[in-house]
Length: 397
Ligand code: CTP
Image (tube, rainbow, N blue to C red):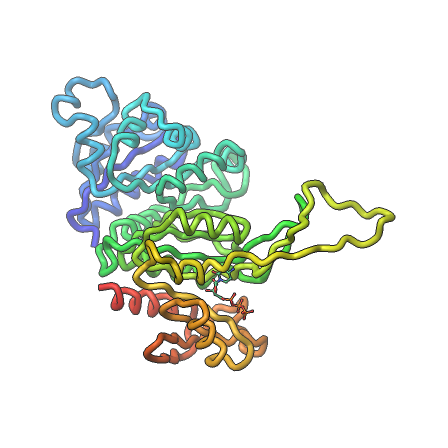
C-alpha cells in the first residue's frame, strides 16, 4: 500500500528523534521513498549521516543552502512528496505551523506545501498541556493538519503523562490511512460523534453517557477507505481517530455551527448523542447555595442537526445517515424517525439495558432506508463501522 509513495519527513529537535530513525527503516521496508529534512535542533539528537544512510538520500537542512536550492528549491521540496510527516512534532514546530512562520527550511516547507501534513507530537507533558500548545493544536486541527498520538507514558524527562511520540508502527499506520487509496478517495464525509455538554453555569453541565466509540470507529473505517473525514466530536471518552480532521466542540449549537462550516460534503454520518435541550437560563457565574431556595432550570430546544442537514436545499450531502437509539418498538420508531428527519438511512439499535450495548463494545443494528431494512447480526462496534463504511462506499461510487 505504501510502495512507491514519497514521504517528506521533517525531524524536529526532540529526544524522540531516535524513533524517527526506526520510522525511516519501517517506511523503506514498505517501499516508500523518504526525503528527510532535519531541523537545526534535530541535529542535536540524530546525526545527518545516520538519517542520510537510512534514507539512502541526502538530508535537507538549510533554507539558504545554494547547493540545495540549485538541486531542488524549497517550494519544489514541499510539493514533490505525497505526504509530509513531522516526527517528532515539537511544541516549537507546532507553534511555528499555527502562526504561519517561515524562518527555517522545515517551517517554510510546511507553509509552502499543498500536500497533507501528519504531525506526531512529542514533548514534555506540561508543554503538551500548556494553553499555548492547546490553542496551537486546535488551530492546526482546524487547518486540516492530521495528528497521530501523542501517547501517555513515562517520558525521557522523568515525568509521566501524554506527550510521548507515537511508536513508529503507529505512525506508519496513520500514514497508510492518510494515503489510503480506497473507493472513497476524493470523497469528503462529515461525521459527528460523542455527547454534547450543555452548561448550567461555568462549572456545571448536562451531559449523557455516549462514549463516542461508535462514531470514532466509523470515522476510522471511512478514512481507511480513503475518505477525507471531518470528525466533529463532543467531549468523548475515547481519543479521536488519527488521519482525520478533528473539530472538538462542547454544545449542540457549536456542533451545528461546525457541521455547517464543514459542508459541502459527499456524505454525513450523525453518530453524536446530541442533547435535545440546553439550559436557556444558564448562569454566567457559578450558582451559589443561598437562602433563595433551589435553582430552577429552564430549557430550550437544541437545533436538530440531522434534520437541518437532511432538509437543506443547498449543499445537501448526497447521502445523510442518522442513528436511532431506541428501547422499545425499535424498527417502528426508527422508521418514523427517518421519515420525520428526512435522512436517507437510519441506523437503528436497541439500547435497552439488558442488551449491554450502551457503553459496551458490541452493537446489533438494523439499517433502514426508504427501500429496505437490513438487520445485521450482533458484532463488535469496529465491525459495524467497517460494514457501514463499505455500504456508504457502495452508495457513493
Ligand atoms: N441528532 C442531531 N441533533 C439533535 C438531536 C439528534 O443531529 N439535536 C441526531 C443524532 O446524531 C442521531 C439522531 O439525530 O443521528 C437521533 O435522533 P433523536 O431524535 O435525537 O433520537 P433520540 O435521542 O433517540 O430521540 P427521541 O427522544 O426522539 O427518541
